Length: 309
Image (cartoon, rainbow, N blue to C red; front, top):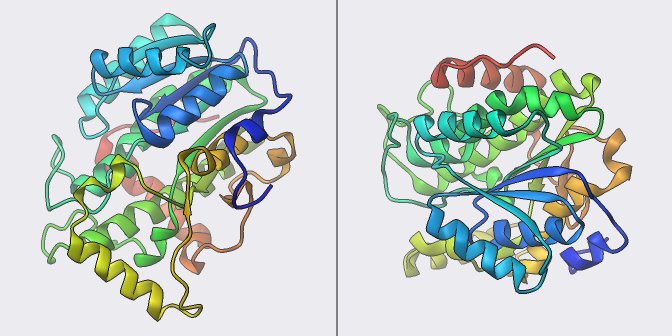
């Protein structure tokens, strides 16, 4: 696999008939393409989106290329723990197993805002919402084990910040949207590491994915000044090279590869990029004590312990 690998190349020859997958943020961009690709393999895909209308539009878009796609829709807002709990309860009531959980939804570089539960928006949505969702769905993942997987969408942007343990939700320090995004993406990686450490032996593996640079609705909060600032950061990097952009099909390829590649069974907890295991993550994402600390903090913040595998 390589930088320009596409989702269709990843799923070539792959069949997931009888498997059940949930994709958050499945209405647009990488989530929509990830859901389409998994549906093309025969999996039943639950489109976890913010409204029934968005779900219906996404299902229609997928069926335009995969006419026999097995699709379901669930409503969830990762910025509201109440809706996360409602979505998870509805899913668990409908059946007993979950093979693939693709935690794809997210926000980026948002103005300062808080979630419905008072968390800083990027940390609360990108990490805490998905942490709670995964905790609630853990029994269904265990029921499908061995072979069930959790894929957490991170980003190379995690290098902008480690976790600020004293004030992760910007209660006292000045808000920095780039730093906040980086913290949330670091959290995605640390969560993947600790989830795999705890649940890997029971047959549930977790992976963190860097999709690459893609133009999607995720960047809707970026201003001209933001783009200039990012360009300057790239110029100041060791390579000084401008970023290479991917298509949506290329960007979603690593998420899909994380979900289906059999060779990943022995690489639980890995950071993935360009449809391959990568060592390009920041040193602080490999700190086992930090991963365990984030797990405990997250359980406390969302008020939900994980079940013991």
